[in-house]
Structures are given as structure tokens and as C-alpha cells.
Image 1 (spheres, rainbow, N blue to C red):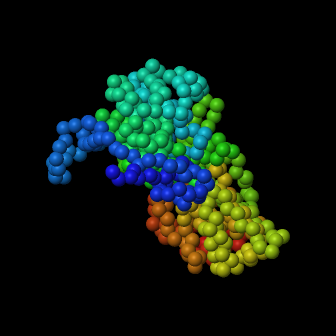
Image 2: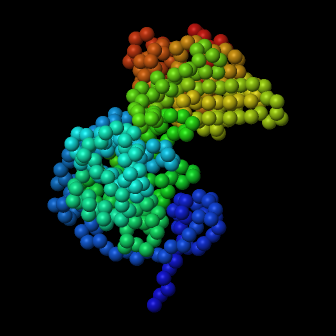
Image 3: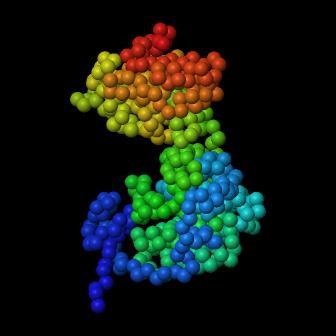
Length: 462
């Protein structure tokens, strides 16, 4: 008889390894490698296929009937936007985020809204008791009797109860606490997480029930467990936010039924999460007027344009090596732009400390932020504020040229909606959208950052 193979896995990130070590080679955590016997899978009858009932055998594309997916609105516009218009029947959605960020609260509010319209919703918790769930549910308001709760970790028992109830939506919190008795691995191990997700995927597709999974994250922000977990589900949602602020951002990094990188903005309060329907207005709240080093940028998050404030503080350094700090954007990109400014414009920044910040807690990495960062740094360096009601966007190359960015017209219209009348952008974008801009909006097209006037008047700029 062959010897049973022993595997080891990391309890922090779920990486598998054939031998024990003190430090995980995947996430770098110490003392997280534990031993688990290789699982022996027992096939479950009736749940091995994900095809819809009545479908059998291969068919040609001409024989397939195309139809729009039935969507169920969640009662939260921001969540519907991120999902692509609502919850799709039979879909499997993974929601992840840092501990305490509000994942369970968001899904509980969604369940409450759906149940309030007469649909059955099953909320399964493997982390909290029913009394704990009730205390949390009482903070967000009264729940309808169609919203049913269950504290269970055995997937087979959950499936039996769900088949008896036939809910429209089922929420499993969290996938790392669930287990299948057919596998000898401990809950949270790579094998259990993988097989639990496959089990729920088959269940969602065969029974046409939308399933939401709550997933834990590792210390570097990625979903705990095998990377295959994100490939198996239909939609992956990341709930982001800073513990020092009340704003939360829900981001879709994968969506088979809608656009990716779409975001929804929420504000955490005593009664749960409140939607922020106009993020630009919230991001610019409290912005100083006519202050040097402050520039409004127009960034795109998915299909939504958002206005944010970019701040820069430039001061003479007291150190041998000037300090460089970037908050809310890529640090290396800021260093690159500072080098472009020094080389192409002649700004002597080598003897200055430079601090760049995207206010509001939103992290922006798209290239369209290049021009606002340059203008903010120049404004702080020259101690001259930009003209009032001015916004900017555009990508900057190493030779100082300005390049076109995507969805320029949408950015301009969003800025005009909030009362901004002067928009600085790349000349290529300016020529492309000039005939479609709203009345009263002035476009300033730049071909190179050398065309930026020292007093920021832009009167002679084309």
C-alpha cells in the first residue's frame, strides 16, 4: 500500500507546499505553515454538472437561444452599478475586503431590501451566532419575515435547507469557515475553500439561485485561498476603505455580467452604509479656494468620472536627500513626473521636499492624473494658485508631451456639471471633442508641458 501523501498549507494566504517551513514563501508570513493530509474526494451524486436542466450534449452557436439575463435590483443604486445593473439569477459573487470594513453589513442591507419586496433570502453565517446577527441587523432597521438566517458551516446541510426554502438569493459568510465532510482538510484550507466554491458554483447554476460569498483577505489585500477562487466565480468585488475615514469604495475587479473596475461609494454611519450618489461633490467638500498647490483632477473609475483634489507641498529640504511622499497615487509615478518637470521645465526640485496627496481617501493610478500632479507641483513650487473653476486631466510622457486619455468628453461634462468652466487637457483630446462640449466651457489644449505659463493665466495658450 502506498504511503499517504502529506501536504502543508499557509493559514494566512492558502498557498500549498510539499514540505514544512517556518516562513511562507508566498506571502512571507511566519509560523503559518500547518500540516494537512491530502484530501480524498468522494463524488456527490446529482451536483457534478453545472449545465442547466434540459441541456445535454454539444450544440452549435446557431442553436443557442440568446436572452438577456434576468436581474434583481438590490435597492442600492451604487451596488447595482457595480454589479452591472443588478443581481443575475444563478450568479456566484465573491465579496472581499479587510476585517471590519463593512462586507457583512453591505450584504445584510442588500438582503433586507430584497426581502422587503417579497423575495426569499437566506443568510448563512459561519462566523456569528444568530443572536449576534440579530444585534447587527437591528442597527440597519426592521427586516421582513422573508429574510431567513442560519448559523451553519456544513455545506451539505446548507444545501438541503436551501433546497427546501428555495430562496432567490443566498449569502454565505464566509467561505473560509465552511467545510465539506467528504474532505479531511480543515476549514479554511486550500482544498476546502476550492471545493466549497465549486460546490456553491454548481448549486447556483443548477438551481438558478444567486449566491454571494464573503471572502477573507490576506495582509497584502488579496483574497485568502487559492487564486483559482477568483477565476471560478462570476464576479469579484473588493470593499476598500481607510479605518480613519467613513468612506467605503466597492470595486468590481471581475464581472462577467458588466464592466470591470466599476466602483460604488458608500459612507459608514451608525445605521449602516449610506450611498454616496455624487462622489465628486463629497470628494471636493472642504477644498480650499485660490490656494497654491491645489488642483482639481477628473479621473475615471470604470464608466464613472469623478472629480478629486490633488494637493502638492513643495518646500526647501533640510536633509541631504530630499523627501518624496505620495498618498493616494503611485509613488514611483510621482518621482518620474518630478524628474520630467526638472528636465523639461527647469524647475529646481532637487533641493526641495515634495509631498503629493489625493484628498478624500480615493486611490488613483490612471495616467490621466499626470497633468494635475504636475500643475499642483508647479503651483506649489511657484507659490501661485491656478485660476478659479479650473480642472485638468491628461497623460504626460518623458519628453513632456501631453497624450490623449480615454472618455475625455465624459470627463468634461462631469466637470461642467459641477460648475467648472476652464479645463486643461491634451491638445489631441481638445481637437476631438471641441464641437461637443457644453456651452460656457473653455478648453485649454496643451501639446507639451513647456506651454504651461508661469502665471497660469493660459491666455496665450491654444
